[in-house]
Image (cartoon, rainbow, N blue to C red; front, side, top):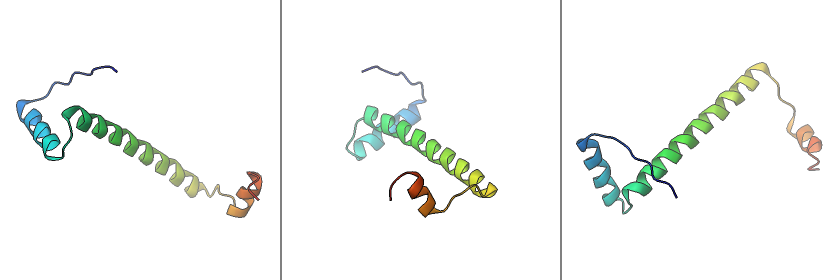
Length: 73
């Protein structure tokens, strides 16, 4: 496992430590999960943007046809 060092104000550090303690987690676990959640949110936002672009063009095929193409029926 690797270590990442963060620079932040004393106020931010105190806030994060208090929050981690309040929720029964460590600072490391909290920061790790916050970073991973942010990445997941960005991925979801990107996927939604791509979907909306396809929807705007009307590049869809009917569900039944897609199932046949994927040999699910």
